[in-house]
Length: 461
Image (cartoon, rainbow, N blue to C red; front, side):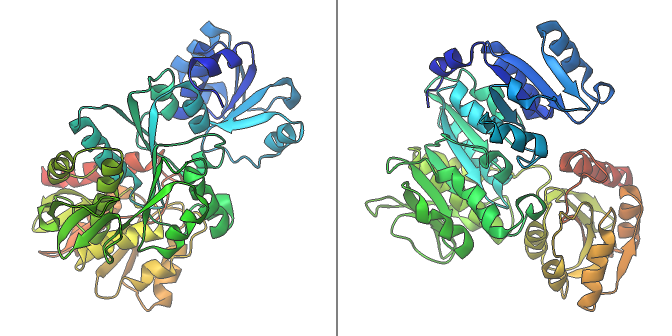
């Protein structure tokens, strides 16, 4: 597959339908329009519910839109570009596929439209922290770097027209990966694999297969950084041609990143060791964050960055918003925002990091998860459970099956925070870690987390 200007030449005059007008869909439509394609867009929302600025842009550029409806003749297009949130199994998309129309996604399009070098980080949990840290390390090294993907800017917005010396440090989801074809990162990473998005993928096998696509086109000149301590994740390395580099808290690999006592170390392909820092020097808490640092250090090192640069950036890294983020102390009680904890495993990780005395606020869109494992971690850790959102009854039922009954149901976030403050005593920790997506009550997990922080801030006044 051609990249950069050569691919843009192939797009000129092609009829391309962009499906889904979230951030990535709008960015894809703009990039395609600038490349000279004949752009069409579709979204299930009607015009009155979409961004007026983008509506004006479409009108100015002559972009044809299908809003609140779908095109009757899907064979009229040369290519479909799916936004990550759009299931490729929708009837009208399947109809186009059967007609032989090319179907791709924003990540693949981004890769084709530029010549920049990709670092691609996936996994069920830890992606945002790891991607942010890798971005900080790359910037500290002096490389031209953009941190993109699920973490913020759409990939295509930064990748289109990118030169060969630009590095795109990219958080990639299973949704983005399932529509890739030629996408080939220089360094890929699979951090872990636990149940998530099963309402979209159906089975763990399908979910894992989507994640494994991150390394599908890599060669022996590329690197796959992967968690040796997670057997399900590590098994995804079996079909890649990339050079596999493990990271581990428990084992010393022949080459890779590992924990030697309390010291984070790297080992080169020739066996040379480099000490990065002691885990006590990290500003982010929990074993899971040690794993994130190990992965980030390995990614940067095997991308050619000096260990001293990695060490300095790791020591200075403060963590990311919405991931066990300390929000303040009110009357001797610590408040933590873990709104990014959108699945059971992420919430369990947060509970393990805080250890005990936790008042847990959870609930939302449960994505067809089983909450039994979450409830099993309440004993000795969670003092009280405060629930909100659509699937609160499902979590409550799971908790009661384990014998946990100190449960409160609230209608919204302010009521949750008030109830938590009422229950908590000196030395306790109030933790928002929903184990659920936010879509039943909020536009995204960021909005949910900021609402929680605002509620805490009100008590600090």
